[in-house]
Amino acid sequence: MAEAPTTVIFAAPLVLPVSAPPMKNGALLVWDGRIAAVGLLEELRRENPGVEVRHFPRHTIVPGAINVHAHLGFRRGDEPEGGSFSRWMTELISRLPEKAAWTPEAARNSAREAIETGTTFLAESSLYGECLPQLAESGLAGTVYAEFLPFEFDSPEEAVYFIEEKVRSLREGLPARVGVEVSVHAPYTVDPKSARLAAQRVQERGGRLATHLSESPEEYEFVSNGTGFLADIFARLVQADWEGKGISPVQYAESIELLGPRTIAAHLATGVSEEDIEVLARTGVAAAHCPRSNEYLGCDVSPVPEMLARGIRVGMGTDGLWSSPSMNLFEETLFAARLHGLDGETGLALATLSGARALDIEGETGSLEAGKWADLAVVEAVLGESGVSPEMEVLEAAASGGVAATVVGGEQIYEKPGNGAS
Image (cartoon, rainbow, N blue to C red; front, side, top):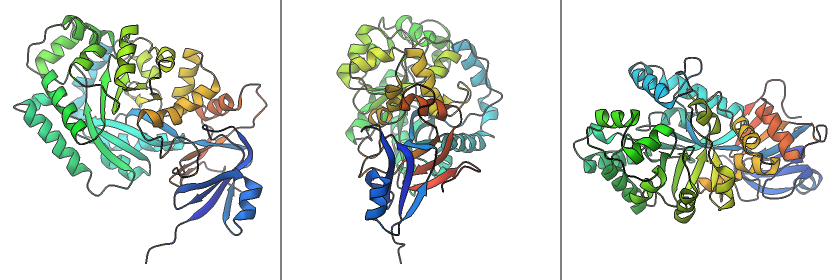
């Protein structure tokens, strides 16, 4: 016999739905994993007698963080030296043979760190979806974007057929809110014909696509001029000739039909011009902003305010622990807010609802609304003491390790020791 759906009320002195004004002494009625109602605790308690109430005094409830671009399979403590994308990439490639032995443990630890810092949905990119088992077992909702290397196959057709079949097989037996899609890794690892064909196949089946784009000065030089460190990588790995295209990486991606409303492009940090922003806006592509990784790798600053002004969907990503100090998406977002001079309301939205929009899942998560999944973070924050907005105060608290509980689909999958509900 199937178990009866669980009903519970989550409550705190302040609820920040993101899609609606702040609510003092607010609460969420959760039924069968979804939010059934948002309102005052007093009213929801009166209308639902006997329902368990998990009240978090001196806390604020916000939507869970949505990490739109992450690499779980890296570990903290032995990351390649930063400051130069080419130097970092050279060391990364040299250590790939040893990495296979510890990738599963690293992915498990990274997922746990994400949960403990308030993330509820995570978009992971890994080679052939290698980190899917760890995401699936973690309790997170999310999507794994499976990267593929066409040079390991005899033809683009064979490579794309393989990754499509791999994605289909990986989807079998997964938790309800975990999915698998395709990633066209980058211009310097995937040849134009394979990239175009993969994008076409994804579009035909109504899937989603991820890619790294315009990340580094080296990538810009490679695409535009056909020279530099990445030209050598392309020649060695892809074993094909490459001539400079005379255009930017964004314009190149458009030329091979990689960009569209169901594509998310990570980084967009180097050489993104006004013309490129127009391309991004016209094609409807979404952007994953990873500012700490960009800084560590010696890349430029993504023009996020300009992209937001043009209506481009922007979400936040941590990248992985070999290029970023943590898997704390709120910490990543606070860094971005300070970098770009954004207010707290914009920052909290970037970490939550904007990320959901970037991944085209805003109908399911990203804000605290009736009908959506009960994905939320409970943050230790005594509001009104710092003189900043509630959104900025909560963002600062969450960035500093102040997440007391994380709830995914109504299930509390993390509770900070000694700081639970009353």
